[in-house]
Length: 298
Image 1 (tube, rainbow, N blue to C red):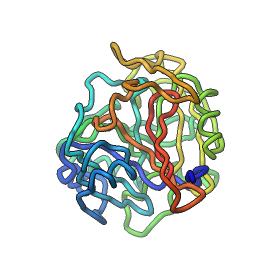
Image 2: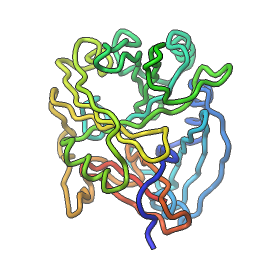
Image 3: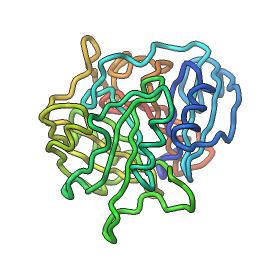
Image 4: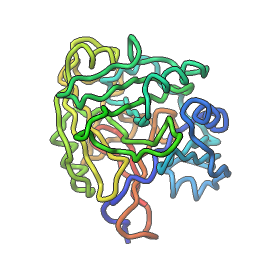
């Protein structure tokens, strides 16, 4: 019996060469706390996380959301250099902050990260949600974003405010896709629904992404229980790319062929989205979307 359709994005799973070290970074930089640290057997790591072989797992919590760091014994390749914000391998997650100036000042006191955005946090125009955002990489190369929503009665409340919490929780994971319609069809078949769409462009978006002449179609997809939600980023300009020799091959039912855009399951760039299925306790499903992004329904 399969796990059925996805009803909730339960956690994001990052591959790391040193899960304990990376966990310390997320505690220091983003206010996460460790809730579990254990060695997963080969069978458990394969079944629940889709990695090959045994792995050290560190589970972090931020607000009501979870982030899992996995260190496979048989570690794959490191995060590839030169992956820009419009690359099909690019997948980031957004942490909601109460005050961007304070959060950015706090981050600057922590070592190990590298900026993607230029000129610091960027306030996007109202047509792009009016949010203030800043993109950067963690010490292993995984992209992430700090996100502050505007103080407005009409602004979305993605993560509820909590007393004395500068870093409030994870709002979404965003993936770069080559074709919005194709990816929407894939994720709607999984149980997600389109909840918002916009075209983001202009100098603020260019500075946020560290790119020139940006025009990106943003599609938000939500499960029955959210947050977090999923965002599809389809770059009209610059054209999406995956670097030499790593273009996405697409097989039947929207599955990427082996060795596609994200390489192999134990590579540092092989981030997973882990969804809860509508039938708890059913056998987990490991899937790959049309652009090589990995996900599981448990």
